[in-house]
Image (cartoon, rainbow, N blue to C red; front, top):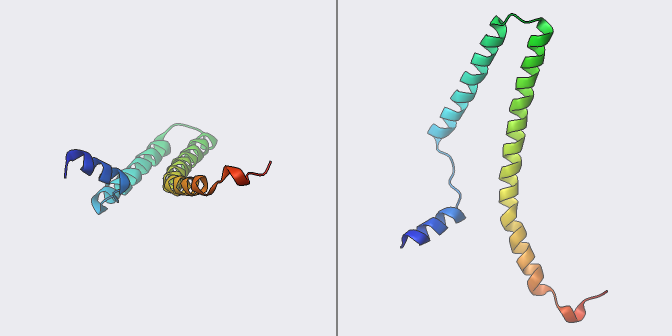
Length: 99
């Protein structure tokens, strides 16, 4: 196999993340949230300001997860849409077109 063939095969078959990568991702997220909460706890701010920053962090994490899942889903359905589009193009007959 040539280098070009391997590159095409890698693009066609998405790789699943390893357990080490998933573990490192969770560890980084938990460490980041913990450091943020410790900093927020020790900040000289009003309780309402701390609540605002805490909710902002929670909503930011939610937004990041939602965007990531939408991107993943769109990539998964892109291939299905391309296959359906090709099938419809093959089935379309200009002689039977209704205006």
